[in-house]
Length: 57
Image 1 (cartoon, rainbow, N blue to C red):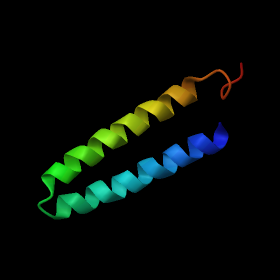
Image 2 (tube, one colour; image 1 turned 180 degrees about the vertical axis):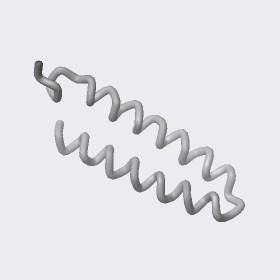
Image 3 (cartoon, rainbow, N blue to C red; image 1 turned 90 degrees about the vertical axis):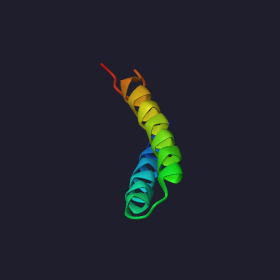
C-alpha cells in the first residue's frame, strides 16, 4: 500500500507540472482534463491518509 501511496503522490506532482505548462500555452481543454485527474489523485491520497492501516492509533 505504501508504494501505491508514493506513486499517487509522484503522479500528482507530475500533473502539477503539466498543468503549469498548459497555462503557458493555449491548451485550455488539456488543462481541464489534467485538473480533473489531479483532483481524483488528491482525493485518493486523502482517502489513503485517513486509512487506519496508515495511521495506527
